[in-house]
Length: 277
Ligand SMILES: [Zn+2]
Image 1 (cartoon, helix red, strand yellow):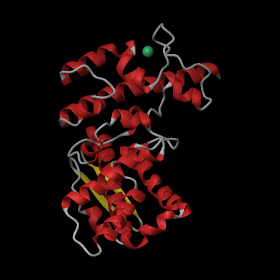
Image 2 (cartoon, rainbow, N blue to C red):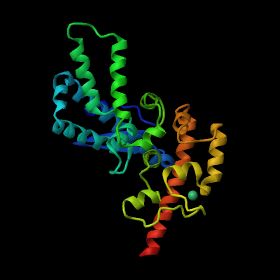
Image 3 (cartoon, rainbow, N blue to C red):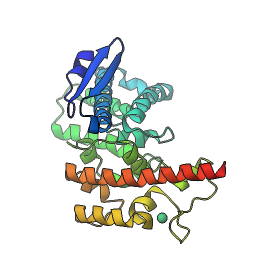
Image 4 (tube, rainbow, N blue to C red):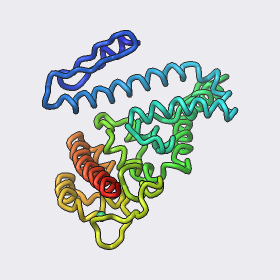
């Protein structure tokens, strides 16, 4: 398995060194070392996840029927969730569905059920590409119908395009925006870390949420205007990700905006905590 990881194409002058059960990541471009190592680690995590998924699904037509037993499904999903949280750098409270979508990996139980279903239906006849497409869409609909992760699904309305994108690495800041779980006072209040969930910058007692931060907060009006000028569009919860998917440059522009916003919110949260102690 190490051989596959060591052959992965990595950005910049990043190199991998394998030793015993560990892999070390090095980069010679000191100025960009942190960014390049982050991208490389994310790439390795995605690859490991895809290998594990392929291994588990290779005999899914046989064990897929066992998913009718809830305990088996829970065990399978729990292992898959941990990998998704690591890939997307998501908070542990992020729902299974949102974490899996952000990590770019469809729910394993649905994929297994799909393969078992395809296998079952192929007995006695050959499945057409159209048949397979119908089954895949049914699995995706089940994901979209899930009760948790609504904000993520609002931000990522075209799941197929998101999963099949050719560019764009998810990171800690983007994940906070896309999951709604981050240094937002509304989220921190839900966790019991804040008594007030209103934005400290805006005057109208507006709830500080991911939506407010990205699309409405006056604190980031200048950065938002620059981003919209670059994207050639007024951003909204429904069009931000589709615009990111249009080009790598768009993705990077949004990523820079979210990094700036989330870094500022985190610094402010730390200031509040220091003042309170
Ligand atoms: Zn605000």
